Length: 434
Image (cartoon, rainbow, N blue to C red; front, top):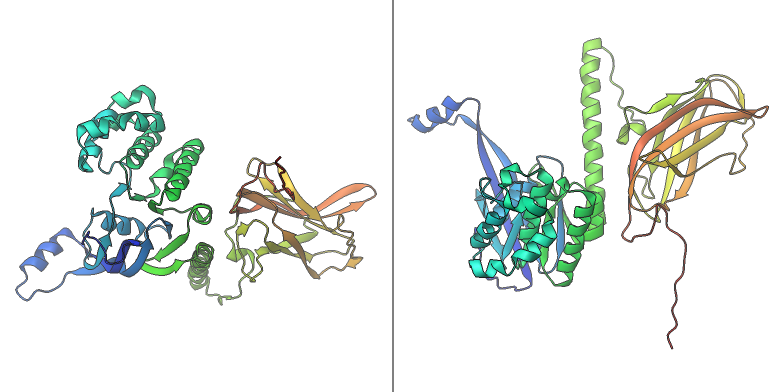
């Protein structure tokens, strides 16, 4: 790997045909057998943690790297920072890097927090006097009190993350690289960190970070990179990259379902059904609250975006179809179909039903199936919510519940803007100055 001035001074990081290959042996003795074999026989299998990855990151960009566990994201960051050496390919870096990788990296567990501040500064090339001028800012940001004088081996993961991030941002980085270490901090600290990201972005500092949160990618990044099984799948627009990641995860989930079905079918000697219900393409809650007489049963449901994709991930102010299919086991006159979105602590936030929409259906006969669709613009703020579904009926002033599924699906709402509370208000703003 080379770290040198680039011909194009607008590029902060350039990755060219990068691969990292590990040799996997079935037993420790195989390594020795391979080394001593007179005809150089291989006793290993090659595992590509990264395979021919290339991209460029411009100066001042905030770029998110996303992918499932084990896809090679952390390996990529370690090669960029020089912790690992690539098998093939090249990385060129233009600027001083400050990196926050996995917890513990670069810190001496026997040193106190204060001693590690100076230790990290020394690794970055700062003299002790230079670090003394930065100590107070680091202490104020970390906000861990007297624990700064205790060995870091006694720190909680959250305290360690606070100190490590405080040091990383106060050593005058031109490029800040952050692995998922921030996920261990509390919400207030994470908000503090991402406010610092915004400040750095305004100063033209390049930020590269790994996350599982698609919300953070949309909110804070100008560009995103999707890595899967060591291969770069997509590089560019955040929303498009996130959509590709979501499709990838759905296909993986569907593949796992199919594999389980095939195994079960082999055991029971049954034909395998390849037809997929909508709910099988969602990440559903496997412990919902279900009750009702079951005279009418919700047999399928889904959330569909404007591209016809079934998704748990919704964007503010975009339109979605909330769909359910109900099978009727008895004749029912004027059933009511409903959905509700709730907060994770159970507060009902929004929703509607066919009665509120003045929709009546007359008699639906036993054996029939009805598929109903609610066209809904997403008004909720960023966050995690739960979708509930129901089929009921009012008769003689009493509510009869045929089938309710509370907390059927967890959904994530993403917004590029913020609002106070849980929903966006339609509002205009003007100002006059004299």
